[in-house]
Image (tube, rainbow, N blue to C red; front, side, top):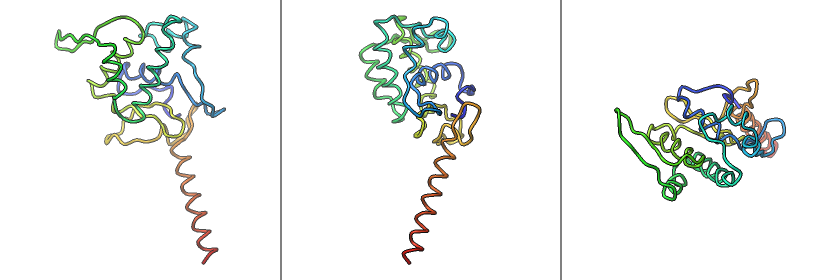
Length: 186
């Protein structure tokens, strides 16, 4: 899905949030929804490779972390922060100002770390650039100047699907079919 393995100019916090959000995927080969977070959590080595700044959840923390991930994915899809706000109301974080920067601090539980990362992205005005592709639902970072990118990619890469091109071809074929039907009826 386009830039699935590449990085963005948005920085490591955005990339780690994308990695976390994309632990639920629709792979190109099967096109079936796939849950990868529990498998990652089962392997300390894989967890450290994919989510190096996020503490690996204990078994009793995994369900809550899955719920948070699903809520944050819904916020990205809706281009809002309503669910994030709800989570922060239930699990407030501490804000500290020092050395010219705003720091979010709090408990070290994985859910709290993700909440701080998400809040930081909102404060840095990066959250609004996270998008979920309407076809494959892959979360990507919109680097376009006007912040209006829709698809994960227009061109199939080594690991990606060209969702934008596929959608354009579908629209073109539907329009051709409609024109043909009008011609035959006329």
